[in-house]
Length: 460
Image (cartoon, rainbow, N blue to C red; front, side):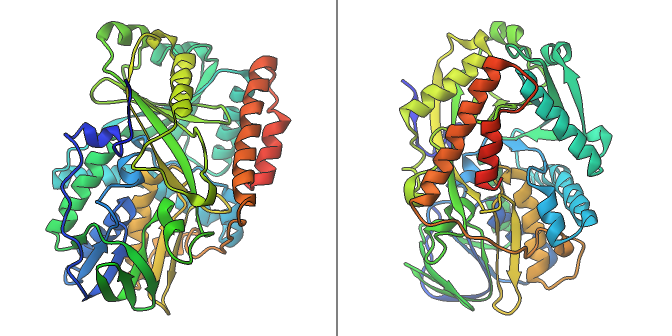
């Protein structure tokens, strides 16, 4: 029987959940307080300590470091730019968007540099990302994506298109007609990365307090159920869990994503599939999926499942729905029928942060000393690193190239109240799934009108 929940397979792969660090022992005063011990909070603390070793920094975490998306994600370290470039350009400039995209690409090398120099073994494997097209409409969208990237001056060595034969040479995805290849990416075991980050941050002198629930935040102080922290600078690094904080219910939507992982595949099956380069694998359907070949020779496959729970509700320690498990297994079998007899070992889910304009952002108010980052829309492994670098510069009041990037202090929109929010998200994904079915049936180069309607209504 498939194991369901227990936070994620990635923690199980490490021998189980980590022991808790001590909770906040009572009131204290520090220079910087960070809320959330995931990638964003840990990277922010790391860069602050490297730049200003004498700073006193405390991180407060409701559960344990890596409890959220940082320990549950698909392990895609890509430095990719997913969001609407035109929206960033409106609040900045074309040159600024190009600089932002360049900075994001650099995070892959930066994360690998830190892990190697600090001795973090996170099963990182440099590889390519393959977004497979299995219909004419999907291939047409990939061509459009490539043309758009070239128009925004993405280097040609960063990506290219391949046909069915070249795709089959790499991974034998059923009915693949081609793919978009993104170079300069890596596979990672996400829980190993976040636990390693927490350890090196502690060694640098940062205090991490777990089992400490934040109950309020205002200029100069963070209140928790364990005491009050007074700090001149405060960083909220809660991403998908932002809506659970007092007064933040409409700032960020808690989007659900689920993953299943197979039992280890025998060499005979890998010979049938290919996948010898350990590439990251996705497809170009509107519903979207993401997969990796793990270091233990399993397939981890993720997708949206039930995309949103009413009122930004959070899962119960990673437990997902049985129908979602069946859906993800069907995706594996659709793309890779060679594994039809392979069992699933583990399934889990988690939330990721989605802002109303679907664009990641970094915010900092010098007057209050309060900053935040998030809205990565599923690309947090790499984006959180750039956010941490940027927040460190903002906290230290440095005027740098990072603080000028157009995702800093962009105009903000809030989400609609319930039940409009729930109806909108579920309606959007219902239209996407209908569009995918129509495109598969008709197999024309045109994207389904249903998908275009969903994009318009959702503001994607």
